[in-house]
Structure formats: structure tokens, C-alpha cells
Length: 408
Image (cartoon, rainbow, N blue to C red; front, side, top):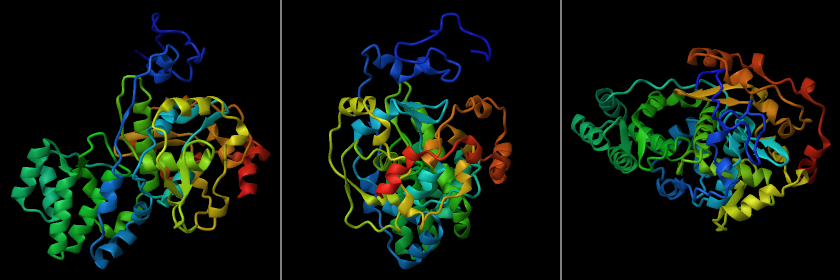
């Protein structure tokens, strides 16, 4: 449908949904429209590689040094081996990509750059990644130059995946081979590609990772210069936006991040245990030891329907600020991108998560309707200070948001 042209046959409002569709323009495709008609799409298929990552170990101190410098070492502590499907489904049903937020009875909430910084300890400032155009021939060159595989083996793998991808199992074999040969940089690239492919770039293929991501590890000394936190959030937003469509049957993205965010902000919803091994200097996601719990969505759906404002922990990281200080870039309002994926980060819609009173925010279309190139997104990100939300003008301090802080 063309912008500004109204489809006369499109619903003007929805049972239990918005009467004004000026914000949630794609609500007709949302899973919530079917739920009000007692049409449940059934379980989403969730892809989680927790066990794969746990069994994929660093085999030499030289690799450990390179991983520590990459900015990604903290991911090894942020890996839940089980996913609470019902809990995830209940939140997915409340995600709306137009606002990049969960719509709850107590208002909007979202996973912010600050959440990513505290939960995962990934860098949230830095360069955004421009993914190279990749055909089969270029993919083979990447595998030869950056992983040290033979031309023959590279061709066989690209043919096996029928694209510019490699299998996780193949990548594990390459890692083992490079370790045996003591070619530590090649081994480290294989390790890091496996790590991000299983976690922050987890897709719905379950077995493949894109060869183009190897470009991130070409210069191992420069890996930490990327905004890995922005990448993680962009990918998760992308898959949440896909999963909330009623016809979608699968969900990708970093499920540990989603669950850890729920655990921190919603202490009464979902089963979890405090990890006895947790240290405050570690990523906050490692604070939780996920326990087996109900996999059905209905109990969690009912809990979210009945939630009240005092049951939310708006600012859970007060005791973690010594290790992860608050950064003004977390108030950046605008597009995030990674490769060609782009998603809107809109902190003005969730000011209570920053300790302030929530006012009526500007329309998300102030950001999302803007015709903007990837280069312009990068420029705005580089000059983020010009695009941060002024919380001093946006709203006064909200005492409700301090309850969780005072409790510690």
C-alpha cells in the first residue's frame, strides 16, 4: 500500500486493540489480532545454541588473549542452556516493531542499549558494520585467507550450504584443525565466528553462519572497535518484529539477552535462581541460573495481563554501575543498524527505565518515516550527542522507578 493511501477494506480498529492506527500501522498482521478471536498460532520454534557454546572451549592461552581483546569474551558468561518458551512467547506477543517496544498494561518497555551494556558487558559505542557483498567466489577467498582452509575445502563447504554460509559443525572442525596446527589467529577467527553465530547473530537456519561476518575478525586487534551492543540489539529487534507476525512459526535472535532482561525487570514472572557463582563485576546476565519451568504461554500471558506498576523493577542496575557506568549514548534516539538491518531505538518511549516520568512521546514516525541512507545512519551514530533524549526536559524524576533501586 502506498504511503498516505488508505485501503478501504483494511480494518479501522480491532477488538482489544488500537482504535487509532496512526502508530501501529501494521497491527492487522500482529499475532494479537488473532488471539482476541481465540485463534492461537501454537508454539514458535525457538533456536538456542546454549549447549553448543558450552562445549566449544578455548584450547590455548594465545587464543584466550585474542578473545579477551575482541570485546566479545563476556559472551562466554552469558549463555543460558534452556529457554523458557512460554515466557518468551508471552513477551513476543506484546512486541510492536513500529515502536520497538513491548506494550504492557503498565505502558511500554523495551530492551535498551543500557540493558545490553549491563547484561552482556558488550561495547555499545563504536563502528557499525557494513557487510560486504558476498558471492560464492568471494566467500571461498574469505575462508582461505581468514580461516586457513584449502581452496578445495572452501568450495566443498560453500557448495554444501548452497550459499555464502558455513555450517557450525564444519566451523568446529576447522577450529580443531587450526589448533592442532598451532595457527592461533585462524583458530581464533573460527572460534569468534562460531560464538557470534550461535549467540548475537543466531538466525533461523539453526546450522549456518554467514561468511561475511568473518570480515569483522580480519584484524583481530580491531574487533573491539565495533559497537557489538548495537549489533546485538538490532538483530534481536529484527527477530522480535518478525516473531510477532501471526504467520511466523520461528524466532531467531539472542534468547539469553531477552530472558535476562525479563529476569531483571520482572522479578515475579518466570522461574529463575540466583547463581551461586555470580560476581558483580561479571555481566549481569550471568547473575541468573535458569531453572526448568512451565513451557506453556497461557500462565505467563495471564500474569502479564494482571501486572501492576509496582511489580516492575524499572532500574535494576544500581549496584552494577561501578562496573558499567551509565553512558549518555544509551539515550540516543534514532536508527541502529548492522549490515543492512536497521531498527529504531526510541528511549523517549520508556523514560521510566531511566528513572523519569513518562510523558506522551513524539510519534515514532519522527524517526521511522525518515528516508535515510546507511551512511547517514552512521553519521548520526558518530555524532550521537546531537540525537540523545534530553531527560531533564522530558520529565522529572519518577519516585515509582526508585523502589527497586532502594531495595537493592
